[in-house]
Every structure is written in structure tokens, then in C-alpha cells.
Image (cartoon, rainbow over all chains, first blue to last red; front, side, top):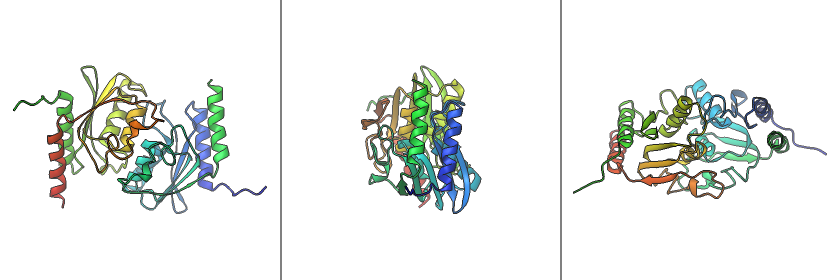
Length: 151
Length: 151
């Protein structure tokens, strides 16, 4: 069976998710790229140090803004292993991310194709192009394994 | 005319909003309290340093989580001068804030009573009690004056 190869930034996001699991954090990873350059790689980290806003996307966006010295990441794309929640979708819009690629969809907490559907709101000032599914099986299995161990 | 007095934490949030305007940032302020104790006070700061996630609510929640050493601010209330956007409403839910008080409503960007209506989504795991309007005139005038000067 031929499968579309997973792009390098999504592989890095999956590696970051694996690192999160090893650290006892929910395994989600995110990568910000600008053209071919990787600007920021981040994993979910809400427990250590305690930060309710410490999702992988938020951490990657903040790091990228610091590194580029710009509030708006207009020419940047974001790769993340799970469909962003309302908080993260809002942040992606504020950051003016050009393209959003996410691996697994998240009916329970996602706010792109589920729930709040942040980018579909009339008031949403910036909508990224959205692509999903690449690395889906890998990303979902990481999450399943993590929660299976903790039950 | 008798008016309900503005609670002390909202006065502090308005002061933080004034400080943001003086620093050239959109004037929004937020305060996290636990009982009678003020845990964190923050102003909007997205420009210096550049941070697309630097809304007052996000900064106050992160600071409170650091100070209390807890990811979940279950016994805490948040006062903010403007209706939270989708990003901030999502963060408020993740942080398990007990009560949200906001001054001015925001039809253009708010996601509590407008747009994404984050707390009304079925998938929303934690809904704070929500109160609005106290300090509304003061908060709205700060924003109007800020944008008037910049036109």
C-alpha cells in the first residue's frame, strides 16, 4: 500500500509528542516553520511547570514570535499532531499563521472542525488554510497509549 | 443616580488596562483573585515583547498558575475589562476558573456571548459562572480613546 509520506515538520511534531509522553504530559507536539526553516518546536507542557495555557501550539507560537521578533507570523505554517482546541485556534488566528496542518482530529476538544469552529466564525479576522490527516494514525496511537497506561 | 460600585479587582483590572494604553498596547487588564487575595494582575502585552498570545487573561492565568504552583485554578475568579476572545475563553476553561467577571462586551472579538460562544459548546469541559457589565463604561471608553488616537 502506498501512503503519502509524512512531511518532515510533522515528523518533528510527532517526536515532540513522544517526548511529552515520556515527561508525563499529554502527547501533543507542534512545529512552526517559515519556508524550509524550522523556527520553533514545542511539546505540550501544562503540568511542569504548571501552566493551563501550556499547549504545544501556544508554546510553539510564543517561541516563534520571540525568535522572529514579530507578533504576527504571517509567512509561517504550523504543524500540530492534534486538532487545535478553542484556545489554540484563537492563538493561531491572532498569530496570522498562513497554513495549519494537523494530524488527528479531536471530536472531544477540537475547535476547528468541531465545537466552537473558531475559523468559521464571521468575526474571525484571520483564517489559515487548513489541512489534516497526515500522521493521523501515529498521533492518535500516541494519545491512546498514553491514556491507556493511566487508566 | 445610584450605581452599583465597581468591585476592587475590576478597579485593578481597569488600572492595568490604563497602564497598557500608556505602553502603546491595546488597553485590556485582568486580575485573578482567590477569595480576598489578589493572585495576579496583568495587562495586554502583545507588542513588547512580541507575543500573539499575550492577552491580559492569558498572562494573568499563567502568572497565577506559577504563583499557586497549580495548573488548575479551581478556587479562583478572573476579572477582565473586555469580553474574552476564543483563545482566552478556552484558557479560562482549561484553568477551571470558578467565576468570570468582564466589563465591556465585545461583538467584534468576544467569544463568550458572541461568535464561538466557547462556554456554550457541548464539548466544553468546564464553564465558569459568568457576570458582565461592571465597569463597562470605563473599559469601553479606554478602548475608544486608544483607537481614536491611532486613527
